[in-house]
Each structure stands twice: as C-alpha cells, then as structure tokens.
Amino acid sequence: MINLMNQYNNYVISTAILYVVPTPIGNYGDITQRALDTLKTVHLIASEDTRRTGILLKHFAIEASLFSLHDHNEKQKIDQLIKKLQHGHSIALVSDAGTPLINDPGYNLVRRCCVLGIRVIPLPGACAAITALSASGIASDRFCYEGFLPSKTKSRKNKLLSLLEESRTIIFYESTHRLIDSLRDIVEVMGYERYVVLAREMTKIWENIHGAPVGVLLDWVLEDHMRCRGEIVLIIEGHKTTNSTILVEAFRTFTLLKKELPVSKAVVLASKISGVQKNIIYKHALKNIGDK
Image 1 (tube, rainbow, N blue to C red):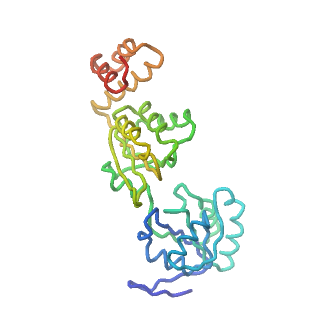
Image 2 (image 1 turned 135 degrees about the vertical axis):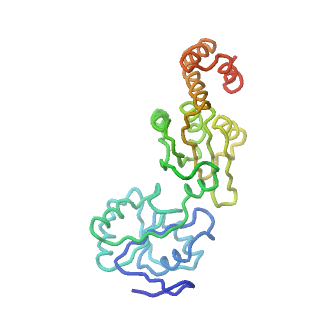
Image 3 (image 1 turned 180 degrees about the vertical axis):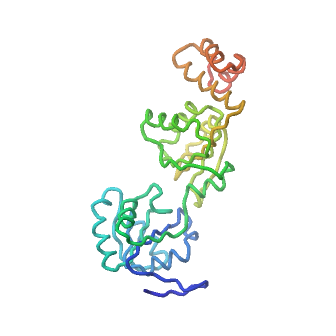
C-alpha cells in the first residue's frame, strides 16, 4: 500500500484494485483531489482515448502508463487487465470525459472483476446527465437515464413510444447531427407541448441550458444552427395525466391523421377520438403546424 496525505486524512492506494475514476466533462477545475491522487499513484490507467487522457494528465503534470480500452477492443483486452490486477497491480479506469460506464466503455471489465472477486472502488465525480438535470428545473426526485436515442427514425420513434407514459423525468444524450430529427420525433410521438430541456456543452465556455415545450424548442434550435452544436443532454418531463395531457394526445392524434387525411377531416376525427373540441385542435393546426 502507498500512503498519500491530503488535507483530510491518509489517502491509501491499494494493490489489486480497479479504481473507476471520473474526469471533467469540460472544465478541468472540476476534477477532485482524490481523482488526481489516484491517477498519480496507480500502476496503470486504462483509458478510452489515450490521446485525450494524455492531454489531461499533462495538464496536471501526471506521468503514468496508459492502456487503451475502448468499445472496439474491450472484450479482447480484459484478460490482460485482469492478469495485471491478479498480480497485484492497481488500475484506474477512465473515459474520455465524465464517469466511466455511463455510455462509455468499462462495463465488461467491471463485471469480470465483480465475478472474480477483484475489488472495484468507484470515485464520485462529473457526469453530464446529472449535472444537466440539477439545473433543468424539471423534477429530479425520480428519473430514468436512457443513453443515446437510436440513430434510425423508426427505432427512435419506437423508443419514444415505449416511454410515452413514463412518469419519471427522462434523460437522453444526443449528437449534434441527430438533434433536430430527434426533436421532431419527440413532437410527433409525445406531443408539441411536452416540456423538454436542452443542455449543451455543460461546464464549458459555451454552456447553455434552455427549456420549452418541445415544439417551441425545435423552432428555437432551427433559428440558429449553433444551438445544436456540442455535447448535448435532452431532459424530458415525465408523463402527467392532466387536462393538458389530454390536449397533447389530441394534438398528437391530429398530427398522425394529417399525414393521411386533409386537415379538416383530421381535425374532425382527432376531436371524436380525444373528446377535445374541434376549434381547439384547429387553432393548434393553424398556429403550430402551419396548415390551413
């Protein structure tokens, strides 16, 4: 064991342990002292991208041995890391940014360690999903994290449909080039009025957090292409059974019917299905869909 002193207590790095170490998601000032002490002292750092990790280590004047571990080689490289752990090495697992395993590599390694009885010590630290949620203004007492939405339209809509009546806050990561398509699908599946927060570039210079009914949010993004740039978190308000929910369902029904029918006929059928007055649905069509 190696003893390291910090201002609080003796910090101990033990051998034959895998440390799961979060790294900053943008602002290097967010790294913890414990994370720095661990990275300075372990025998090896297993990194998703050794180039990016190398930049981080250089910034903090840390010299360390790096081992490449990413989505495409994790299963093939696990045995090498397990042998090192079994021979008494200490290893830190890091991803490009944030907490490892949260949409990043590392699950298979951690799982194997658990099965073999190798100790895994997780360090607390940065996570874009939690950071965004804390400032979203959407309920945070119950939430579900769903990773990235599917890249293909049909699968994405099916995923959203499966979460249509989820009462917990829903968190997704999204990529720049798919954001607009995803927002359009949320409008179609969950309704124009479903409240969504777009959190972009968390902790970085261009950090921006903007919430609105998703139809309005989509228009806001379309106004400026820079609003869909960078690392993105989407936070969707959970399903609520209220009068507003009935309206959302009525508007969603109208949107689906309009694809196959004239607007006037789609309004009539949507009204009959939902029980919402025709003039309300028609006003929605004029204001938000743009059809007459």
